[in-house]
Image 1 (cartoon, rainbow, N blue to C red):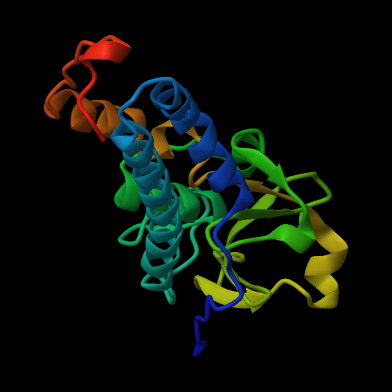
Image 2: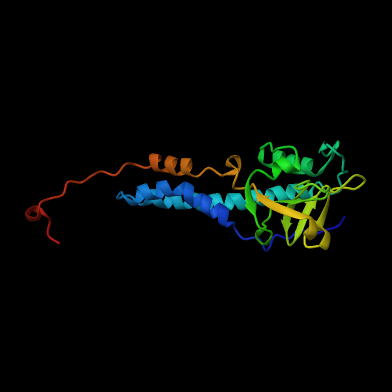
Amino acid sequence: MQSSFRAGGWRQGAVALSLAATLAWPAIAAAAEGPDKSFAQTARDTAERAVTNVWSGAQDVAQFALGLIGVEYRWGGDSPERGLDCSGLIRYVFQEVTGVTLPRTARELSQIGTKVDLRDLRVGDLVFFNTRHLAFSHVGLYLGDNQFIHAPARGREVEITTISSNYWQKHFNGARRLVGVLPALVPSIIPEALAATIAAPAPIDEPVAPPEAAPPQ
């Protein structure tokens, strides 16, 4: 199946920004009380890098999934060689890209990460559907521009489809965000800031001269 992948509508996530700011805040607050502002700047820089890493991580997950288009669907399949079912596709992609092992079923996947509204979907989010008269019985990976990739059903292959179509809108169950939210997928922030601060020479406290001994201006 031919399809194009465009992520132009994706903006750096509010969740990632909030998370990065939360993790970096203790370092920033501590630095604000001292004379050396480099710690605060370091914390800000690492927070910004974390947001960029989250964005890159989501893109990497989506790009890797695109390489699986055309893989045969197989119930219980968990690799391209043996075939993939819907949750097997998600699990395989995240394992290969992030090294994180996710739960095996669509229902289990629907219970991790952070809930996301349909209008707030971003690249890398998981989208869930009721396709077997059972809530959260199908899962796909959102690619942006109303498209998601999934392993649909027996006799078909991994493909991209449009989430705004009548069928998928009708059966939509919800979405979850994993990239930048699950602890194992959160970039390291504070260790970098602390390392940079420890490596810097400690400031020397200069004695304050009494008014009469102060040098002329």
